[in-house]
Image (cartoon, rainbow, N blue to C red; front, side):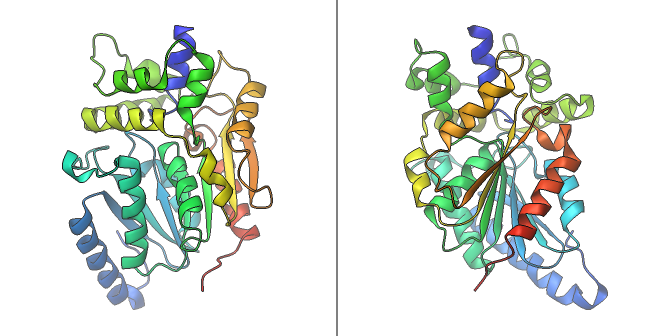
Length: 312
């Protein structure tokens, strides 16, 4: 059971502006505007590339926005991509605790919505991985009038409920308190965790490097928030197209692909069926962009073609 709980916990520990010469003036203005917004918020860093309808890409816990590089390369010819790295992760300065307000998850949701307004983005698509997937779902439920669509890459709306289901003797609160402290190197093997999240050796090294570049207190507290969060009741408010891409090997060998798929379907059952679709990567672990990048980008592109920009 301890090994199973460790496997489940890895789910949360995933836990240059470019353009033609004719657009350099507009690009410089956009860059200055982004820099001013970041300074005012300090909730994230953003890199913007490409031209066209806006897409926002949000990585997971203790991850850099660089995890989206292959997706950026696939989409930048047709879209303007806003690639986030959240505060406290992968070398970005952490948010002071007094700035967390109701919590990191809520603070980030509000900051992302402010970013949309301040950058005058016309109903962007939100794509998020893991923690970013949770935020994509939360924004689709909280502000469907401000976004066009959402893609959830292997994120869950109620991770703690899944953990409690597998380990009923531990309460979510107890687990969250335990994650409030950063794991010590003596009892925490980041490479073993990374191997549970991708089959790709180079990506395993990247994941570990991002973990060590992340603020340990932020990582611990945000993991605690994710373990306590339950977005399921709010999912019924979703009124924009949502695609969930699930990785069926992220629980291997402790959960079968069939069990993982059922868990996803149960957790997201409250999303109105007319707005939601599932696609599952059968041979991928948690970092689908590492194990199946071409498949991931193909699914994203198909979804974007099926649900063209719905701006005003």
